[in-house]
Image (cartoon, rainbow, N blue to C red):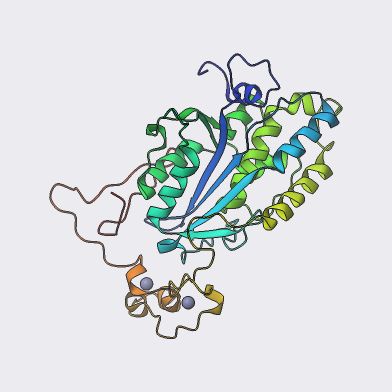
Length: 351
Ligand SMILES: [Zn+2]
Ligand SMILES: [Zn+2]
């Protein structure tokens, strides 16, 4: 199916286009991640969402089609996992999400090994005969996230043997000639997730945190794929037709997500300050927590943050000098930039 565009493939999967293949048992799993804004950009969260099978064929246009989308998205299972060793690292760049507000369910905290295993268990599902259930992986700038997951968690998704296609909402936006609503934006420029959902008049709440992002990725992918059939009565092309219903749908997804039990991996409760699993950071009374490195830092900012974490989790620890072979200087270049995101030399990393 490599010859088909991303929107065409998702159209097949949703049963809305005459399928050229048997997609009846293909799982659609969306994935994203987030990392700390500062070097070495350690991964702080992952978001995974799965559309439950079977995805019954969508029929109809306009309102009838919207009802199908509505019922499908209400069944979406989404997960937000924060990576314990990095969970105290909070982003403050303009537009950064609040990592403590996962709107569509309950956050879990995992160590690196649990995150890798959890991801593996969601994606790799063998049948009784030993063959693997085929998966179509969906994301936004997804190859960048796959690269980062490989570095941070040691999981090489494409080598798992079950991913038959990777779909990207940035590519879907290009298929539909969507231009970001910002000055200077042009067709074919990579669009942000926020701008993509805003194109459909969705008012996102707390994006830039992986759990919320992954839900919006699924929503954006489905609407982008089905936009021609959905917006049949949108004569002026302003995409106002489903503005209220889409935002109401997101609100119901939040309510339903909160009623579901937490995922059975990691800890539902974790203090990012003292590492205990019986309270959250806001309730922490561990007076002894102070980072020796930050408390002695010449930077007033670092000194101010010294009580937020223990010394063993400090990312301002001196970096060991690389050996002559350069073996510890492993870095990786993201697709959209030249930022080094490799593991910090000397830090515990995955095998
Ligand atoms: Zn604590
Ligand atoms: Zn520190």
